[in-house]
Length: 153
Image (cartoon, rainbow, N blue to C red):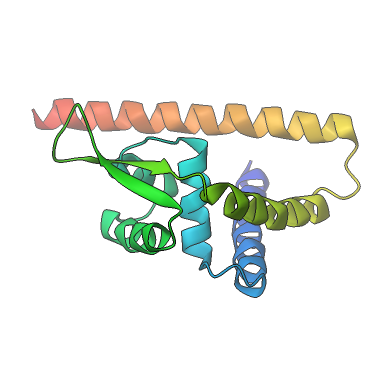
């Protein structure tokens, strides 16, 4: 099992490094962090800033800097949350579609290289397996947070 853990961590690190290099060289006018933020927003349009930061694994202030740039470029809007007036919901603008397509195109090149030699079936199995893996880790993390909160309360 140690080998599986190392393979997953190493693969994630190499994928992130390749993504950062590719975005930096693509001439899109975005940093890799801004590109990641944009893809995360696209995946959950209308999410709160805090939820996006949590999903990305970055501090809220780090995300705030990314959002400032994305907003200045006209790619996102910050809107008042109807449930919590202190929170902001992040939504995409129509002008973001082209940029999102460009970032996804760069990511697709990396993923095509990374999965070269995998059959279509093995690619599907990899996707399904990693989805279950991530779901299990998220559930475990949520359970730990809940237990910690109840222990402190």
